[in-house]
Amino acid sequence: MIKKTFTGIVFIIGLFLLLSVSINFIKSTVIFKEEANRGKDAYLSFNVSPFLQGFQDNNSPKVNILSPKNNGFYKFSTSIPYAVSVSDAEDGESMYNEIPSDEVLLKVEYVSRVTLNAKKFQQEPEDDLGLLDMAASNCLYCHAFKGNLIGPSLHQISELYNRTKPDMGMISSRIKNGSSGYWNNNVMPSHPELTDQEIELMVMWIIQNASQKDVNYYKGTEGTLELHPDTQYDIKDRIFVISAKYRDHGSKGDSKKIGEDHIVINPEE
Ligand code: HEC
Image (tube, rainbow, N blue to C red; front, side, top):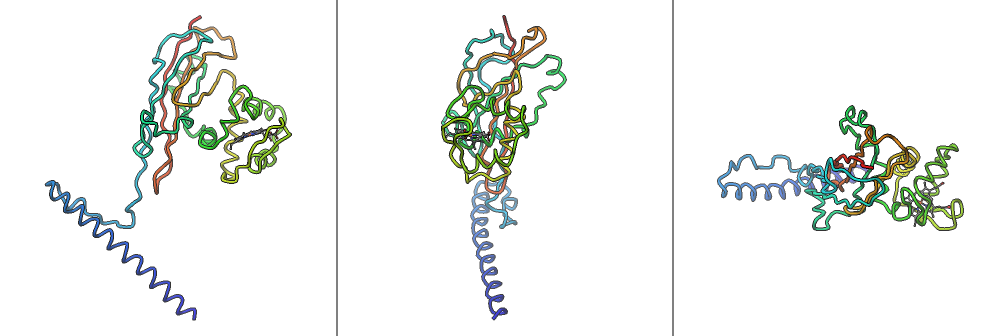
């Protein structure tokens, strides 16, 4: 009985492999002919690896801050319109609304010119994985970085758990199973689609980043930003760095990639 089942399984696997090879052979023959028609070196396009077919390398998205202008001068606390374009071979173009605007994130940082020269924009895109996960989920509809929406601001949550030791298990289970009555009487829905690892990345990101001074975040390919630092440094020593990020949706067989752009802005009194 076991032997028969085994033979059966081997037979089915064999049949599947044969089918896959023949389909790809037909496909490659078509490519072969097409390329030959175009006078190219047809032999090169013959596909020798049928099992890898359909799995493509994912291209990195290209992110471009269109406005404000790099190196421009702007006054504190005025609303400055910004626009970001994203172009991704797999996901599409932001100008045709093919990129989910809410997944494009803008970070405005007030940094010392000396640090900036030393860093030369060497930011780690991986630092913001938790934030990018939140942008791809529904979190930022209810949680602003600063200021209350339906949920408490990320800034508030971060400040609380920088003062008191966070109970990671409790916070994660509130996100996973939903919560009400701890911060306010609104309802946070459950998020059964998220893995424990994704939730942990999000919570760690909030705790570590959301109460940093002189940093603010915006979402969307267009909007207005404000140069509104928390500290009072001499403006001769400080500069604003604006960075935009988008993480694409990956491709079959290849993981998601992050695209980024930076500009600097000089503050004016
Ligand atoms: C529909 C609105 C809504 C959405 C969507 C939402 N939240 Fe919440 N969130 C809330 C509310 C309301 C609270 C306060 C709940 C309470 O008082 O018990 C909250 C509380 C929290 C807290 C504090 C929990 C604690 O234990 O202190 C964290 C962290 C949090 N949310 C993260 C997230 C993340 C991450 C996501 C996305 C995966 C998310 N939220 C999506 C409304 C929302």
